[in-house]
Amino acid sequence: MFIGELISLGVALSWTATALFAEVGSKRMGSLPFNTIRMTMSLLLLIVTLWLVMGVPYPRYADGSTWTWLLLSGVVGYVIGDYCLMQGYIHIGSRLGQLFMTLSAPTAALTGRLLLGEQMRPIAILGMVITLSGIALSILSKSDNSEHHGIRFKLPAKGIFFAAMAGICQGFGLVLSKVGLTHYDAALTAAGISGDSVFANAVLPLPVSVSMSFAATTIRAYIGLVGFFLALVLFNKDGLAQLRHALNDRKAMWCVLASTIFGPFIGVSASLLATQYTSAGIAQTLFALTPILIIAPAALLFHQKVTLREVLGAIISVVGVCLFFV
Image 1 (cartoon, helix red, strand yellow):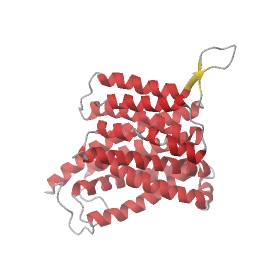
Image 2 (tube, rainbow, N blue to C red):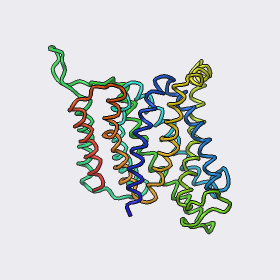
Image 3 (cartoon, rainbow, N blue to C red):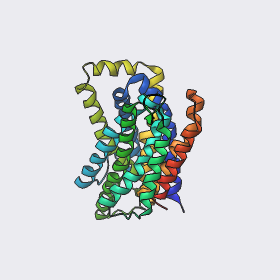
Image 4 (cartoon, rainbow, N blue to C red):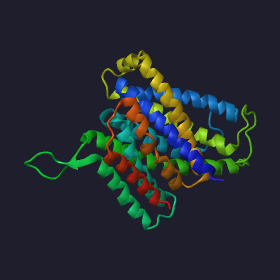
């Protein structure tokens, strides 16, 4: 009972940890080297995991439709979304960067309505307004210029753009993943395999419904690694030199490892698993608790000054997210 909800809460805690490690690592390495190394580590962990839970180091029974949708999800959620998220961390930090991840809920709701036919009641519009109001409360302030009265952004515009894009891509990518998992489930059913069964030759006898979440994450990780590596070498003249320098930064590498374990490995796999037990909307609602959960550790670890206005903004945004799915 409430399995999907408990998993989703665990995802929020996992993403809180990965956001803190990712802020330190991405600021030391740069977003593209950080994501390239993180995707490599994640893919290696996932391949080993598939061998343990499926008996083979690749997604068994995944058909063309499954690969297509999950690769598309990887492009949106990993390549574009994670790049924007790391850039957001560099410019405005993980605490405020995570605030914009509340945009994933309205994005998931709208995309789920279009692609999956999931219902979105009129109260969802109110939820969207409240979510945006909470974000605005945190990032806007009165102008201190005597000649120009009004409001202004407290944060760099570039950081706001990247963080907002990250939130949008996460919500869109989650729904694309759910479509991919639907096709994967159909392929398994066609092969005569039920969600409660266990793959033959599996070292760890986990139910197929659990194993397929790791398989789906592996497919997304393949395109994530390819996308980040190509971006690193094509859009940076010294991309490989940056990568070598990053690999020699011991502190940054520990941050990459921790971020990998809590993020692409545990967090993303668990987020896909959560959608198997609850709707994409409810899952996104609980994932959205991260902006609140991250406030205290970010303030303690990074010695950030947290204002009451920012705390209220984060709480209001999460409340708005909840209204999408009450």
